[in-house]
Amino acid sequence: MAIDEGTPLLENSRGKTKTPLPKIQLGLTLFVLFSQPISSQYIFPFINQLIRELGVTGGDDRKIGYYAGIIESLFFATQALTVLCWSRLSDYVGRKPVLLVGLAGLSVSNLCFGLSREFWALVASRCIAGALNGNVGVMKSVIGEITDTTNMARAFALIPIVFSVGASIAPLFGGGLVKPHDHWPELFSGSFWVQYPYFLPSLVSASFTTFSFSIIALFLKESLPSKRRGKELQLEGAQADTPGNENVSPVPIRTLLKTYSVVIAIANYGILGLIEIGFFALVPLFYATPVEIGGLGLPPLTIGMIMMAFGVGNGLFQVLFTARAIERFGERGVFCSAVLAFFPIIATFPTMSWIIQVQKEVGPAIWVLVFAQLLLWAVVDMAYAVIFVFVTRASPNKYSLGTLNGLSQTTTSIARALGPATFTSLFAFSKEYNLLGGNLVYVVLLILLCLLVFLSRRLPELKKDKQ
Image (tube, rainbow, N blue to C red; front, side, top):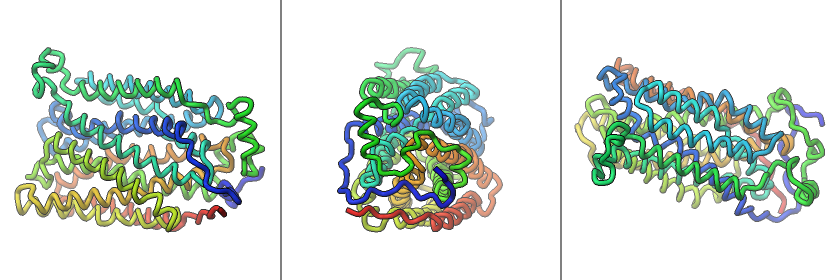
């Protein structure tokens, strides 16, 4: 099969009604996704405090952003080095074995993180998590294989919802379970809890991923067409509506990188991931930064509650609006509009900093801006459901979904690896040297956002299914 930049996206189903979502297998796949924020984002409420207590900054709080950014970036940095290998491997050995390896890696790394009392040990634990984890890319391949073009957008629209629920729970127990010997001395009175005050949230996270491992091992069915047996494989061939499905071999990576629909989708996903992870790292850092240097000075528990509220609200927002918006305005229209919400989000940071410098306390005006910032963030998250569809529909056949999602995940992992360290360090650098009034980091975000807006206008229109 000849493939070039003119190769169309996966062909649309013709003359078909909407296929019901495969609820059980889709639910299990999303359960894998749920373990990702549970394992990676519980550290955000306390990582700045942990860095401060380790003493690596020499008592200078303005340098916390440098070290916190390194810890937050390492998962994605090591993932970027291995995710394509895991995804490519899943095209040959199947999706399920790779998912199980990733869940096992998360369990081990979380336990190591909680037992770390040196900066290098924190670094090692995050590297283990990233190197053994290719789950996000493989999970998207599974969804692409168990859906068709009539229900794919609805399935991918669930990803931000599930991620938001996990992102709401993780900061809550991450911020609430630190230093249990102070909060519940009758239960955690031993010297172990004094020596390892951050182990309890790490243990909760590791326990959940271990439970996820068991559930997936028992109940998830293999979705890779070439690994299905007998009747399932015959049904796959009978239902296939893609001309390229007679080719059961993954398309070469070099060929994929010459396909316009692949390159433009991956480019948008990468820049979107870079900006979004920058915000995700900046928000808790900005909230925790002392009032004297332009932050809000909030404690870890409060930050955890804010992030939990955002997760719940974001999940409800995606449930109520994402699928409907896609049906009415189309995938391209939703993506192009959603990324524009980044502009007012950026503006809220220097605005809050100015207000806090004037008022010297977190008052009603600050809370209104925090609410507006998080509401707009929910609008931005609509773009993720859409870009997943663009990436999946760009695949020449379903046997190449692992490789394609590996390429896209490698790109966004690189972006997310650079993002936290870059933006938190730039935040610290801006504050330390008062560059542009401490706002240089936001100018850099604006430049990247303009690039994303430009690229979003280059996405192809996806054909509508004929009902």
